[in-house]
Amino acid sequence: MKIVMLCDFFGIDQQYQENYFSKYYQKLGHQVIIIASTFENINDYYLNNYDKKSLRSERVIENIKLIRLPYFINFANKIRRYKGVDKILLKERPDFIFVHNIHFNLNDAVNYKIKNNNCKIILDFHGDYSNSAKNWISLNIMHKLIWKPYLIHFKKYLNKIYGIVPEGIKFIHEVYGIDYSEIDLLPLGCDYDLANEIRDNNNQIDLKEKYNILPEDFVIITGGKLNRKKRTDILIDAMKLINNKNLHLIIFGAADKRNTDYEKELKNKSNGYNIHFTGWLNSRDILEHMNIACLAVFPASQSVLWQQAIGMYLPLIVGDSGLQDASYLNKNGNVIVLAKQDINSEHISKLINEFLEKPDKLLKMRLGAKKTAEEFLNYDIIARRTLE
Image (tube, rainbow, N blue to C red; front, side, top):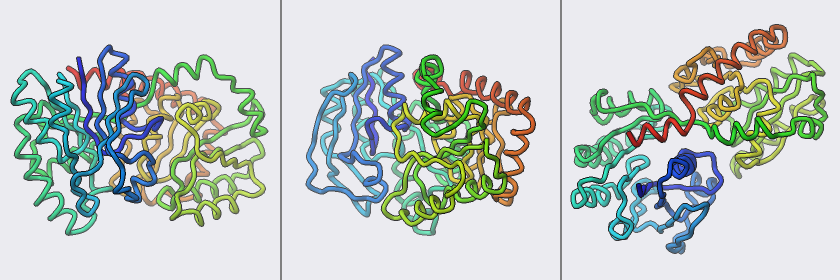
């Protein structure tokens, strides 16, 4: 088939859903075209540093046709629309259109489907109460007054609506009034093929030596965009409470311009302990660092890195700081979810000590992660589900 993915941001070599679907659709033998904004840097996208002078571009990267379009409408960095999507669809003639989030070019996809009835359209929704509708205007104006009527108007043309987390399904039902029977869970997954390749071919010894990690040492990994929401500081404090010379913490990622003071604070806290800051890593390097770890800990703030850690068969400790429950990933006893009151250095240090003292517990959770990755988070399986 020919598949068009309609999205807002698409970053090359990122660990986002759009990247993995494009990779695994190709693996399944399909041709992929991505329509995205002119944003290329994720930090610029999150900070809304949009270059109004940006122009349309088209390139082929890893056999994917990537068409970048400037915004025709960009109202308050919320209501965004491209010009010319209808012409692209008529030219490319897709069999399947994947709309990522409620996109104001959804009507172009629907108009194309009306003229080409065999085309299928699915839409996935990335919002939930933890990241959306945080104030009255957002809930009642943006969601209920603008996005809801738009989605409901075109809903009958959609073959399926997905939420990427259970809380997102609840959000769609309560805010948009869509029945639970019409929504499925489409979890963010892991790059299982790359994970297997790294497991089979990666030299762990050289990477451990880079950080002066001995073969018998216990390694914890965490990372991402370093900001206060992630509470990386309490994980560092937990390391200091344990104070074990055979315990190491690897922190990958970096802060954006708004959080450089926090990154400095983390590094100052870490002096004198086995805590290693790597800076930004690409997708492969992240998985290679996870491959030398024994445990992944993300104290707070939802992240696609949870799934990548499970894909590398890591037992996982994550904090639910509010409406971000990761229990749906705990398919086989592979995740410990911290309630909000337990997101503190004392409790986390206690859990880490249990792993140090009970290697059988670590092994059991590792086997659970393997089963969860293979059966639930493998993008090969997830991609096939969207095409059923």
